[in-house]
Image 1: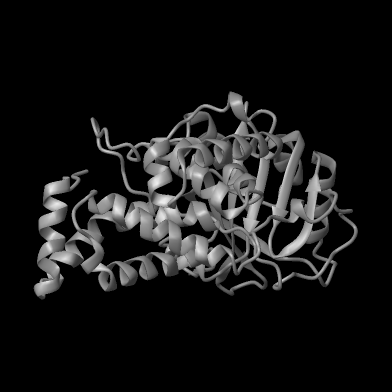
Image 2: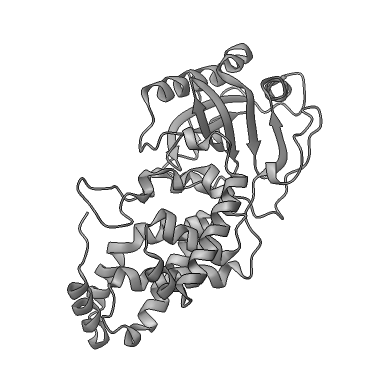
Length: 351
């Protein structure tokens, strides 16, 4: 990917006060994708990240007179975006997953959905900026590492806003302590202290096996094979086949429902109840399409409630697959995200 140098940045921005809106538009377009990922990491919400990117560009346009070319436009925009996110986070609760609310649920007890809780949201891989071979920009390879995965996003929600910003800038984007301190208008010592506290908190909340995860930008062939088998088994409502794909200590969640299940037996029991055609609470028949989110294998699930009807959007599920087994599945029931993932909202009935 191409990057504007400091001199080019200064020339582009210097031209905008005289009415060169096209030059400013080109500049912000150059950095939109990475700023959206940055805001998403800060907020844990795709919807809010989109809003904060727009806020960033509005603040940048209104503050052009304050840019004097002392840094690159990229650093200037990151400063604005980070501070916009910090302002936003001071007024909002952290985003969570059902596992943050209570102990694992009883599969025989169903709780109503909670729309009053700010749930974590997934991020479609199609919106991640590709990393060009040989790109050495400090933040260029960040999306190819584990710092976009759901476990990281869930863990970082436990950090206070400024510690969150320091961790992302230092450990994800590889910014030097001095540059981070300049952006946050604080001392290098305070940045280093915040970094240490943030890392200690992250160690408490990241999964125990995280250090063994391989950083990869694409699903492995084994993961793709497990995904295909999972989609097939779910489409046939084959409980035995689904159970064979689950790890013994598998964990499943489905926000906005606050229940979550741990262990193969509990997950299979919950599925059996939802597939029981004699029950008025039966979900229906499933069809699935493969997709990708947060650099993880994912599926878009559609449900048909009666013969001949179309399959309607139901959930986007992210999977964690280890050693050929599904260790975690999180189904996000936010139907407005389907178009963002470039997914249809309905599928025709099978013939």
